[in-house]
Image (cartoon, rainbow, N blue to C red):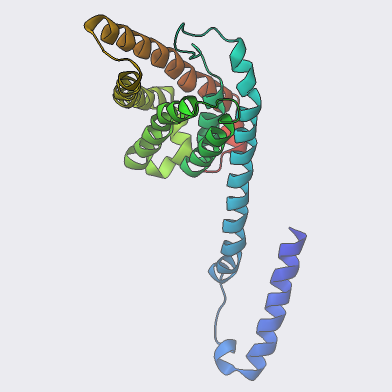
Length: 232
């Protein structure tokens, strides 16, 4: 605040000096808008720094917690955890910072997951499954409550309605992807195998979607984290 006052005093002094040499300057009335224009660039820069910091921290946390997923029960023959905490940090990043922060955190976290998954399939599938849980709520806010920004997602009814739609989109992506994957591995996909794959995909994505939607929401909004740290 002290720096701002000094800046305004210095600006006023410069204007007074210039006005003595230029009659046009003397007749010009400076308003708060003139000062605001000078502050906008630094404000935008500060906002980007905040976005990068939040995305980096939560991406790092998601990578750090990835090894703990090995202790969670997995589906036999699939190697997929019934509940994966990694994506919780990516969605929390979105709820606090918006689409850009969420996507940066998700991309950085996905790259970090390759350190623990040499097959390269797990991180890719995790990315594809989580993307709708970020993009669909963001689109919903932009289309339906753009002026409210991220605060609109503090409404449980609005938030979980969008997450339900995100879940449907998630299934529309993950079901074909899993059939494609297993179709390349298995010589034949008979009816029994198809039903088994469909059952597993529905079960895993249902459980993980509930966690992805519920846990970040409870951590970010009821606790007041968004109220004090939200930046969109």
